[in-house]
Length: 143
Image (tube, rainbow, N blue to C red; front, side):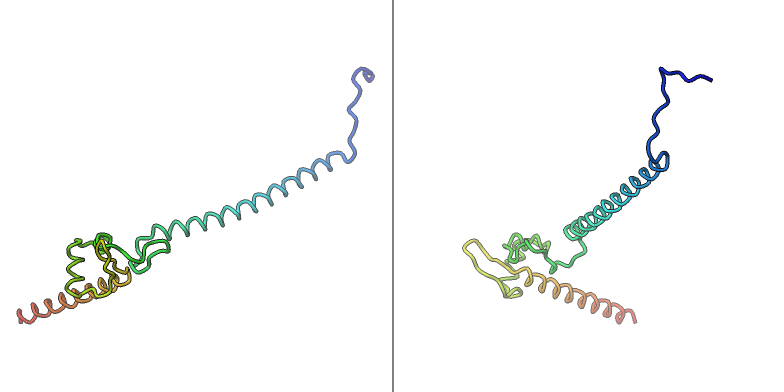
């Protein structure tokens, strides 16, 4: 068989197939390591975002657990919205002495959120006592 002088055989590379294989394995390992590092960073970022998102949207917090950046004192209208009562009821609570800690301003009253929380907790407790007493009275009337 004669060799064609116009088409010489390709030159052999040093190392042959083994060098190519080792290079591919090394490159694959580098890609895996980079992917793991990126994935770890993404997991940390996701966890941080979830914590911040949960903290800002959690509706199960008690009213006293107000996040930083929110007001510590509320106007009459804001207090009414906060307690889900009318503005007139807030003014009546102040003038009747049920809420004793407030600041009188030129435009009305400013009330501390913690005072409103304490009043609300006390009001809920009193309502629970009243409903318990009325249930006991009903049971005694039936006997």
